[in-house]
Amino acid sequence: MRTTYYDEDDILVIHLSDKPICREVSQDWNTHISYAEDGSTVEVVLLEAKASGAFPFKIEHALAA
Image (cartoon, rainbow, N blue to C red; front, side):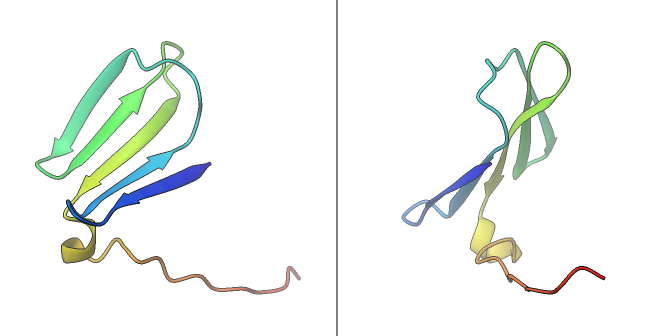
């Protein structure tokens, strides 16, 4: 998994797989999900990521029990 943030456009792209994209679906006006042929999620694109509170991430570290 890797993420790319485009500061000038406030767009966050979360890449989950390197599989080819065969279908894209808009969940709402600012969330778009791309799928591979096998139905797995390839990437998620969030428009206005900072404005919606999705970026920057809050990272918490903890020890497994």
